[in-house]
Figure 1: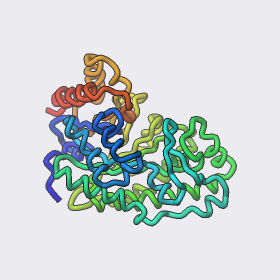
Figure 2: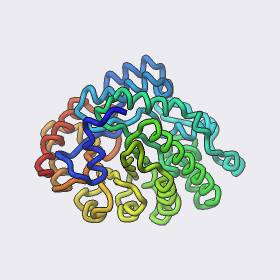
Figure 3: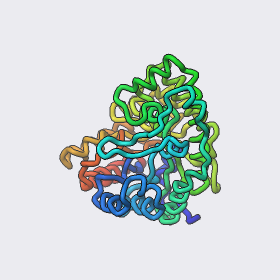
Length: 353
């Protein structure tokens, strides 16, 4: 593999010295970019885009052509894993992902199996292709959903606002939910390790819905299985450490417990003070975040001020990867994203003297 020309992102995750605070954005390859929309139209649909190696490579690289980002993230979807389990993933226009065969009965749960990774070959082909196309420019991030987040979609049959079905299962038949989570954890471990083998240089676990759980339920039904995955991950590959990021949206109250799970870094949403988070986790983990994605709808002056505040709140020293507190909104102005990225690079150098 080509040597990395910019490894600032990887060094920051491992709390090694850096010259500036690196930045990437969740959903940086996506609908806010006109070039992405054009490629998606050409592909025919979202999953057509994911399953075509050339298209997936193209849209992963697009934001790097436009912005001075410090990492690329694989273009894919967290629901590829349950799709490979045979649940029948499809996308309703304006309604998001749905499954034709949700997991709602005991028979459904008993039929669930860890998928053969060959069914996800299109993802691994994309990882290898993207890594080659990057040619050492910046590191490539692989990712997966957390076992609980995947289970939410699998049981609800799609997105949800109330999570009634999965919480009903959790409180009435916790044995069934634990079985789903155990299978998901095995599948995600295999999935991320195979991404690493094909060229992913860091991995992120998206625990998008962990924050809907009570304190006790988060420990039992989400964090426990994230830790199980991390314990099974390949942490050294191709002569280099492969950092692991865990991002629980709404998880700010559990940072101390999450810092013990074995991850190298924790992602923060915009509701958590990064200054307080740094005090709470100490030197156990790096922190990633946590600009409110909707602040990109503000004036250029306000965008710069918000970025400056986050950098000042984190303070001097390494261990900070700048990011949004969730994915970039599809209506965001790409020029405002550029202002944010350039501001972080410019203003962060004073904190790394």
